[in-house]
Image 1 (cartoon, one colour):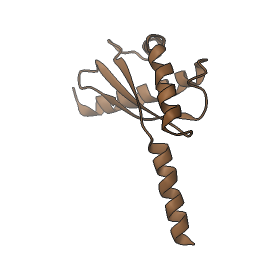
Image 2 (image 1 turned 90 degrees about the vertical axis):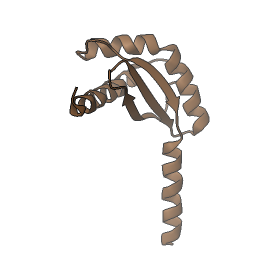
Image 3 (image 1 turned 90 degrees about the horizontal axis):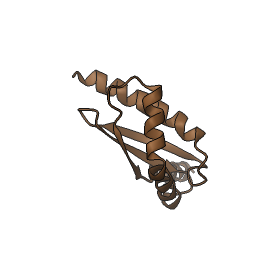
Length: 113
């Protein structure tokens, strides 16, 4: 399987997951939560989704708990929206990359002054 197909599938999964996250009604997943990165295994059987929140690492961990409880629904929705033979099993992980990026931006702005 060519790598460009995996890259395209990864982008499709990321786009659809973002749309599905907007539709979830779980209060743990509400707020400024974004998908930072999606990694799909070569055989498309596993998918790791990295979640970051503007509220920090604690909010991201809470969102991951909500996403884990809704993983079956999310996987079903993903399967109905994408034409994949097998929908990958989803794993959600929290990351603090948004908070880290905001901190770097603040440091750079302080250096300019």
